[in-house]
Image 1: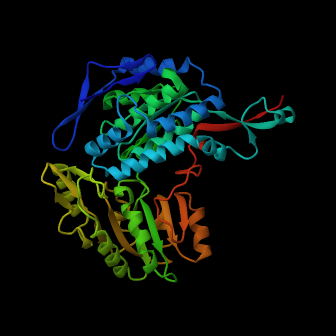
Image 2 (image 1 turned 180 degrees about the horizontal axis):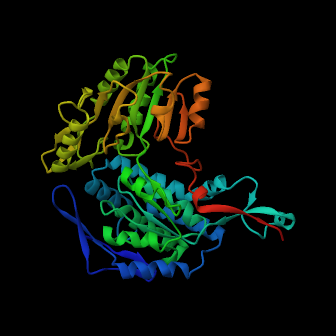
Image 3 (image 1 turned 135 degrees about the horizontal axis):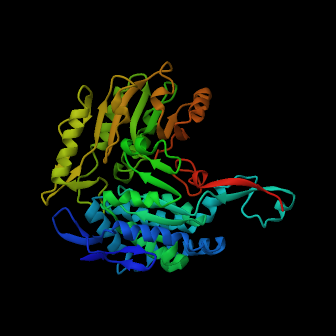
Length: 453
C-alpha cells in the first residue's frame, strides 16, 4: 500500500492522522497524511523566507520535471503504475489519465511560452531591462506565496497553477483527497528538478484546516461548485474556479448534421468529467433532430471498467452512481429524455458501475437545467432564438458557436461572462498550450509598475 506523505519545507512529513484511500472493490490503495493546523501554518511561513530561483532556472526546472513526470519512476511509482492507480481509485478511464500525463508534461516543458504570452506586450520583466532607463512598464508579482485548493475530477487541472510557480511564487497545494496521486507525483518531480523543498509544497488537510492555506498566502485559487464561487466572489485575494457550463450553439443558417461528431466529442471527450465538456446544446429551430442524433451516437459508447484500454466513460462506486442517477431523474423532471431516462447506471458487478451518458430536451433556453454540470456525459438540448440573444449563453467557460453570423460572434466575444469562443466546427475541450483557459492566471497574479532608472 502506498504512503502519500505531506511534502513540506523540511521534506516529507508523515502525520499521525492519516486517511485511507481505497478502490471501488474495497481494497486499500494508499494512506494520505493529513497535515495539522500548526504544521500548515509553519510551512506557509517558511515559504516566505526562501527567495525564488532565477527565472531561467525555474524554466529549466519545469522542463526537467515535466519529462520526469511522464517517463521516470517517482516516489516509487513508474508512469504506468501511477496511471493505473489514478484510474483504479477515481474511475477515470485509463486512456484519459495517460493522455493527461502527456499534457501535463508538455505544459511543463512549454511553460515559458505560456507566461510570455500572458505578459503585456508593452511591459518588460525586470527593472534591469535597458528600456527602463527612460521609463518602462515592469511586470511584477502581486505577492510571494500562492495557495491552491485543487480539484480531483481530472489530473490535468494541476496545470492550472504552473504559471504561479514559473512566475516566482512559492506555491502550496492542498490536494483533493479523492485524487492526491497526481499532485504528489508532480510536486515530487518539481522539487527534485530544482525547486527544492521550499519552492512548492503539498499540504493535504481536512476541511477544518484547509482555510489556513489561504489565510497565510498572499493569493489563492480555489476549485469547487457554485457554492465555492459564491463564498469567495467578494475576496480579491482568491480566484474561484467553478463549473464550466460549456455549451454549443447552432444557428439556423448552418447545417448541424456535419458537426454531430464534434458535439458528441464536446460532451463525452475525456469521460465527460471536465469543465470544458459541453453540458448545453442550443439550437435555433427545432432541437429534436439534434437531440436524437446526439443520443444515438452517445448510446454506442461501451460500458467497461476504467482500466480497460477501450474505456471512455467514468466509473464510480455503485452506491454513488445510483445517487447520481436519482439526482439526475429529480432535476430532469419535465424534460424529454432521449437517452438515460431509464437510468444511467450500468453495474459492473464488482462494486462499481459505469455512468452512462444522458441527453434531455428542454422547452426553453432559460431552463435552469442548462446551468447544471455533472460528473459524466450529460447534455441538455434546448431551443434558441435571436430574441433570447446571449442571455442563455452567459456564465460559459467555452462556447462553440456553429454560425456564420459575424454580428452574433461580435456579441459573444464581447460578453464578459463567456471565457472562450470557438467559431465553427471545433469541440469545446480543445485547448492549446500558451492560450488562456479562463483568462491567463497571470492576469490575477501580476501587475505592471512604471519604473525609470
